[in-house]
Length: 469
Image 1 (cartoon, rainbow, N blue to C red):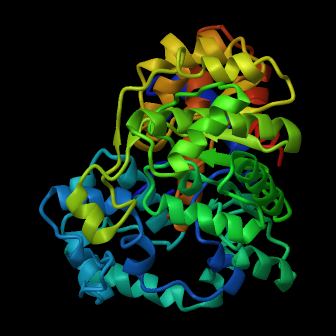
Image 2: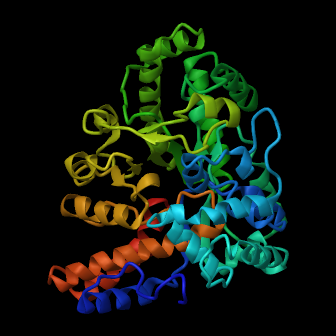
Image 3: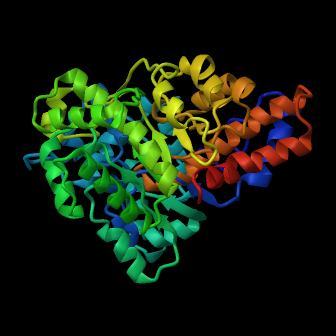
């Protein structure tokens, strides 16, 4: 590959096992990318405008990058991260890039370093390590490429060999960019996903006003429990009309509930009047996961649960910069008790697909793999967020395969806002899985033909099946 990325990246040190991994990877490395869950901006594909300068594309929107720099004393303002009140931040892309390059050594050993080097080399053709000395030359080279048609979003979509990508929009989004993509006649497949946190979580900022807006959009009475549920059904149908095959739920915990309809209505009334306490808020979120699962039985949307993050842990950063600024921190998460009400209600339904993720790796072998290994409705999402590293992916396979196997997992999704990193992330996942499979072959636990079949499934087929794409 060149100076930054080795040909045998992430393959086993043992020569015999490494040869098996190389062979497996060669068969899957060029498969199309299925990206069933992520946070890229649909306006990129709708407008197909040139990306901004290198810093605006690769640094400013990437919380993996700026959280590390902030931890080492670099102000977010100096990295161009916008403030909520519009107060001044750095706008000189070259200055931001230099600050990053001078501190690039901070990312040694991290997946961010791996993805970034991969992008520098395989997307931009740069083979010199990024540093203070090479910062300007790299910046100029990337800026020149970004000004060409070959580096516009749709061209990169094709170059990356993306078969389908799912963005994630809130329940109140008008999906105008998805409408623009459709009207444009472009043949790239970009679908949405239904993210209703802002109208499900009573602790979400502006919750009451959000419910009012939900009622206005749908024509449903969101002051009443029945009307509120109908509003969700209408929005889900609207999202499905733009290709959605999944909903996504970023709850603080995996708690679910299965209240009788009258009890749920009473709870909703209390919350809608502003009389709910923290326990009511927690119970309402739990009930709504089960309600969403029931709706999925009707409309076929795959239910994704992304629990266990203490969102916006720093109130000071939240107040100044808003959500998603690197201060979401993993917490301990229970699944066996938390998911039981939902599983009691719908867990043995083979037509339902509930994909559960975790930031608490201690739950893989103890809770999640045994649950997914028996409940037909439940599947395990891949190593997520803080754990979508080579080490995290390896741990995921080691701790879940013995109980859940491979076919109760759903392949890989990159879950990224950083569009240029998508090929890097998928290739890293493919390499880790091929290395893992090669180890099983070397131990005579798999035949080579089985390993080849599994490598294809893990890289491509399982995601298509699980997300109904």
